[in-house]
Amino acid sequence: MYDIAVVGSAFGGSLMAMIARRLGRSVLLLERGRHPRFAIGESSTPLSNLLLESLARRFDLPAIAPLAKWGTWQQRHPGIAAGLKRGFTFLHHRFGDSFSPGPAGERELLVAASPTDTIADTHWYRPDVDHLFQREAVALGVEYRDEVILEGWKEVGGDLVLRGSRHGRAAEYRARFLIDASGPRGFLHTTQGGAEEEIPGVTPNEALYSHFTGVGRWEDRHPPESGAPFPADDAALHHVFPGGWMWVLRFNHGITSAGVSVTPELAAELNLAEGEPGWRRLLDRLPSVREQFQHATARIPFRHLPRMAFRSPPMRMPRCARLPSAVGFVDPLLSTGFALNLLGIDRLATLLQSEDLQSAEALWDHELATQNDLLAAGRMIGGLQAHFNRPAVFSNLLMLYFAAASFSETARRLNRPHLAPGFLLHGHSTFGPESVGLLGKAVQWPLQVSSAEFRERIRRAVAPVDVGGWFDPGRTRWHPVETAPLFRAASGLESTSAEIEALLRGAGFPEEQCHPPR
Ligand SMILES: Cc1cc2nc3c(=O)[nH]c(=O)nc-3n(C[C@H](O)[C@H](O)[C@H](O)COP(=O)(O)OP(=O)(O)OC[C@H]3O[C@@H](n4cnc5c(N)ncnc54)[C@H](O)[C@@H]3O)c2cc1C
Image 1: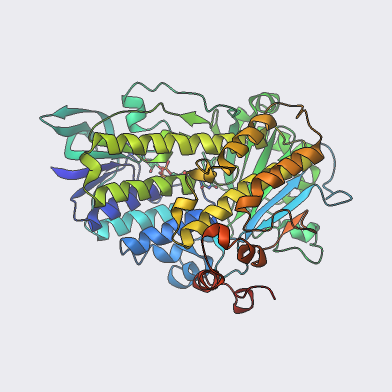
Image 2: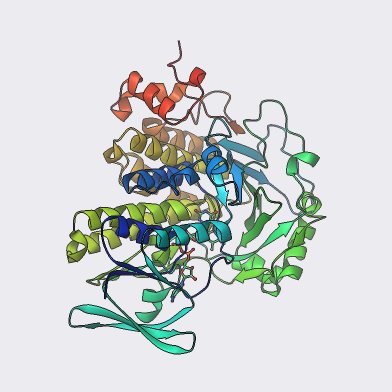
C-alpha cells in the first residue's frame, strides 16, 4: 500500500513523485514504457523555467534546478542533450516562393526571451531528460515499475486498487491516492469513458514529426541583418505558412526536432498520414525550408498524430487528481504545454503540503483551474491559427501572448503572483476580458475593423501589463530584451525600482541592464 500512485513517469509524473517523496509520502511510479525512450514536447519558456526552478528550490531537488537555464544545465548536466533557446523566431512563407522578410520585415518576427545564452531557455531532449527525472525520483525513494500494462482501477474500502499486468503476470497496486500523469487520452480519461470535449475556437490540427540529423542552420542561407536580437536558429524556429506551421528545434548533439501542425484540410491534401512522403510534399511547397532540409535524414520513423487538440471533460473524483497534460492539449504553438503542466504540479504540491489532497473541494478547484488555463491557451492559439496567412495580424496577436507571459513571469519573480491570475492572465481584471474579446474577434474573419485599429486595440489592452515595451517605437520585427519598460511598469507591479533591480540581478541579467534608465 502506497500513499500515492503516480501513473506515467515522463518529467511531469516523475517530478510530482519526487515532490510527494520530499513531503514524506510513500510513492509508487508506474510507467507503461521503458526509459530512455522517445518523447515529444521539447521547448521550454521563461515561465516554465521559472516554475521548474521554484519547485526545485521549494522541494530541495538540486539535480533538477540546473535544468531551468542553459548555462547551469551545461555546467551540471553536460551529458543530457539540450538546445539553446534565446526566444521565438517566426518566419512567414508563401507556398511556392522563396522566403523574403518583406519590405518592412513584416514576414519575420524575432522575440527574445533572455538577454544572454547563460540564462537562456532550452529545448529538452526528452529521452535524456525524462530518464534523468525518473532516476532522480528513484534516488529519492520512489518505487518504480516500468512496462506495466494497466487495465483499470476501482475503490476498495476507501483505497484505490489498480490492476493490470507486468511482464505477462497479473499485477495489482494499492494506493490511497492516484495522480494521473499519463498525458493526453491517458489512464483516467480512457478508464472513465474516453469522451472528449471541443476546445472552443481551436482547429484540431494534425501533426507529423521526427528527429533529424543534417538540418541546415537557417542563418547559413539567410544571414542575419545587424541588430537582430539573437541568431534565428538559437530559438524555437517557427516556419509559418497558409494552413499551418513547422517547428525546428536544434539540440547540441547533432539532432534537430522538426514537425508540422496543419489544418485537417491541408493534412488531407498532403496526405500527411502517409508519413515521410507527406512531409516531402509539404517541403515541395516551401522552397526555402526544403533547402534547409536538403541534407537532412530522419533518425526515427515519422510519427503522425491525426488530432492534436484534446480536452477531457472535468472529472469530480475523490482520491484522484490529474496533471494538466492528462486533461488537455491544444497545439505546440507557443510551447504552452510545460508551463501549464508545471502550474498544475505547483497547485498539487501546495495541496499535498497543506494535507488538502483529501478535500474534494480543493481537488475540484484544481480540476477547474486546469480546465480554465487550457481554455485560455486554446483562445490564444485558436486566434493565431486563424491568421497563419496574415503575418501582420498574427504578429499583433502574438503581442497579447508575449505581454501576458512576460507580465506573469515578472509578477511571480517579484513574489506577487496575485497580480497575474490564471494562465495568460485570463483572470486579470482588465487584460482578461479584453484579450477574450480581441481573440474572439480574431477567430471571426474579417475582423470588422481595420488592421491598424485592431493593432491599436491590442496595444491598449496590453498597456497595463506591458513589461516588455511591446509597442515601443521602432519595435516591429525584432523584440530584444530591454529592461527600461520593466522599470516603467514598476508601480503596476506594486514594486519599487530597487526591487526591479534586485529581480534583474537575481535572474542573472548583465549588470549594465540592471539599472533604471537615466
Ligand atoms: C507534437 C507536440 C509537440 C509539443 N511541443 C511542446 C513544446 O515545444 N513545449 C511544451 O511546453 N509542450 C509541448 N508539447 C506538450 C508536451 O508534450 C507536454 O506538455 C508534456 O509532454 C507533458 O509531460 P508529462 O510528463 O505530463 O506527460 P507525457 O510527456 O505525455 O508522458 C506521459 C507518460 O505516461 C506514460 N503513460 C501513458 N499512459 C500510461 C498508462 N496507461 N500507464 C502507465 N504509463 C502511461 C507514457 O509512456 C509517458 O511516459 C507538445 C505536444 C505535442 C503533441
